[in-house]
Image (cartoon, rainbow, N blue to C red; front, side, top):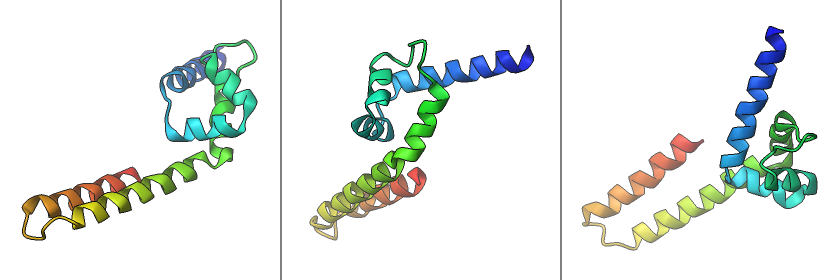
Length: 107
């Protein structure tokens, strides 16, 4: 009984997370997986929707890696834009450091 309740609670927590998270990995997975996309549109509330299986789909889709790659490209672009500012401006180094911290904390 304890295992069943724990499993059900875990699935419900994952289901709630997936409902609220239109994150990069979720969206990338939906692009390439029609069943996942349908379950996402239902908020993973259908009788055959497996929220734990959805997490595995996200892991297997490459969506996490694609999102990380996109984040790095945007970070490099932001740093490039900040470097266009006059080097004597304190905001220039602050912006570069902010992007650096965001990328390191996100990895």
